[in-house]
Length: 279
Ligand code: C2E
Ligand code: MG
Ligand code: MG
Ligand code: MG
Image 1 (tube, rainbow, N blue to C red):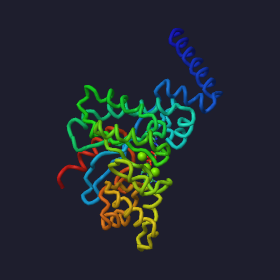
Image 2 (cartoon, rainbow, N blue to C red; image 1 turned 180 degrees about the horizontal axis):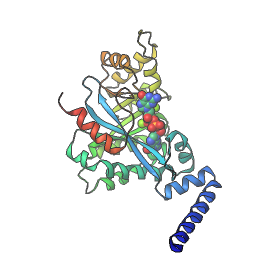
Image 3 (cartoon, rainbow, N blue to C red; image 1 turned 180 degrees about the vertical axis):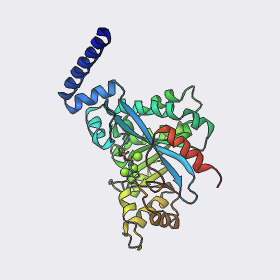
Image 4 (cartoon, rainbow, N blue to C red; image 1 turned 60 degrees about the vertical axis):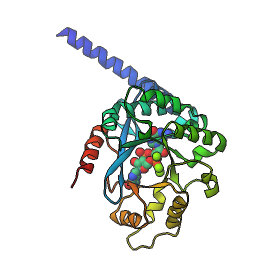
C-alpha cells in the first residue's frame, strides 16, 4: 500500500512544481516551452466548391494544446511567435503535422489540397521551401497538393517575396494571397507576382446580406480577383444567402461555418469522403 501511495505523492509533487514553474513564466517563456515540447495540433477547415459542395481540400489551422487540454486560438499566440522568431519553428511543426495527419488521404485522393499559412518571415526568406520538400520526401504526397497562403503583409519586401513565390511554383505549390482586400496591395503590385488564388477576406463576405444591400466594395474585390485571373476562395461564409450571392458572381470556392468549422484530422477525412460521395 505504501509504495503506490509514495509514487502518487511523488507524481503529485512533481506535477505541482511543473505547474508552479509554468505559472511564473512570461507568455514568451511559455511559448518557448510549447515549441520545445511540440504542444501544437492542427485543425482542418474544409474548402468547398460552392456550386456542388464538393470538398476540394482544407486549410490547416494551428492550435496550441495546453497541458491542461485547453486549445489556444492562433490569434492569441501567432503575433508573439512572429515577433520573437518562434514562428519558423511553429511553421515547421505544422508542416510535419499535416504530413502525419493526412498522408493517406492525400495519396488516396490527388484532387485534395491542403493550404498552409506562412508568416511574413517564411515568405521573405524562402527557408520554408526545403523544409516542405524534405517533409514530402517518401510520403507520396505531390507538391501540387500543398498550397501556401500568405497575407499581403508577407509581401512587403516585394523582391524577396517574388523569388519565394517563383521558387514555390517551380516546386509545384500553388501560392495564395490570404485575407485579400485588408492589406495595401494594389492591382499593379499583385500583377507582378505569379499567384494562383486569392482568398477574399471574411469582412467583405460579412457585408453580403439577404436584402442585397451589399456594400459596393465586395463586387469590386471580386472583380479585382477576376482581372488578375486567379482562383477565388471566399472565406468566412456563414449564410446560404452569402453562398448564393457568391455563386451568382462566379466565385468558385468557399470556406466557412456554413459548410464546416475547423476540425481534427480524423473528422476532416470523414467529412471529405462523405462530401465527395455521389448524392
Ligand atoms: P486565416 O488564415 O484568415 O484563417 C481563417 C480564420 O477564419 C480561421 O481562424 C477560421 O477558423 C476562421 N473562420 C473560418 N470560417 C469562419 C466563419 O464562417 N466564421 C468565423 N467567424 N470565422 C471563420 P483561426 O483558426 O482562429 O485562425 C486565425 C488566424 O491565425 C488565421 O487567419 C491565420 O492568419 C493565423 N493562423 C492559423 N494557423 C496558422 C499557422 O499555422 N501559421 C501561421 N503563420 N498563421 C496561422
Ligand atoms: Mg489562411
Ligand atoms: Mg484568411
Ligand atoms: Mg482572415
